[in-house]
Image 1 (cartoon, helix red, strand yellow):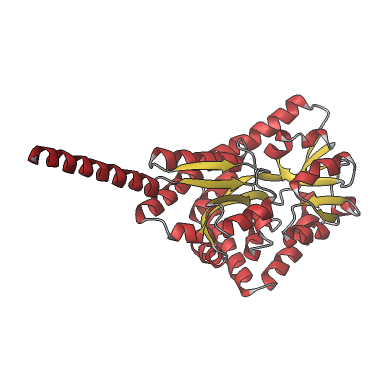
Image 2: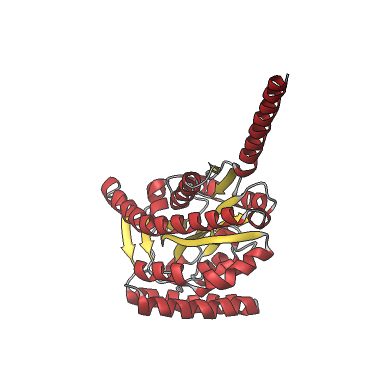
Length: 344
């Protein structure tokens, strides 16, 4: 009888252990959702995949990635992340300007350098990114993880341009949500048309717009060079993206998982800084090989002067909108000077 009771107790103990183990797995092994505004082979996708791989290699957690278009437009994904439906979000800084006005800082014309070494130093060491923006993101229910460059902006048009006068009356598609983009192309002499990515290709095919801007990698990957005739490097900016988490979700993580997420972000940041440079070069190379009739123009130093003069008005307008904007711009200029002095 004692032997029988011992077996019952042993079975009960084993059952309890299994329940505890199952509970432990359910608590500590979760599937997290990561949505982004690009495809998996694009820069945001490369970042997200590196982030996912790091998480899954170093924990029991899994991540499901939702590429562009899976969950609606950029504004939809941002709202879903703020609401906690999504845990992580990859999004261009230009799209975020409508919700977080300070993010228009990264869209200002002729502020960011085109030198990739300076950019890498800036995105790793900037006080704006590492110290000033995180509390601003927190106010919007987000935890900032990374900001990174995707490539120099290029403008594609049906006709060549070499001055603001050449752009007069031209309808230029810009990302919706960013007042700075509208103000920039107005200053450049054009008529900006805010439009979602999903509408852009149709608009180019039907001549609803006369041009658009994107990094070279995007222009090649989505065939925008076959929908326009000229690609122009004006040197006015870079396309930048951010990665963030829902703040309530992040704050609710264990200390171990918080460190895991931050380490994954640091790992993914290093990966994308290396890969983004290659992607832009590859994109341009493929355009040259596959579309030999496509015209590629780089504005000369002299041709850029009137664009840079017009850009000063946009920069001043951004700084005048709030004390926060002015402090961020002042610090960014200091960060960029440091990057110029220390980039190797």
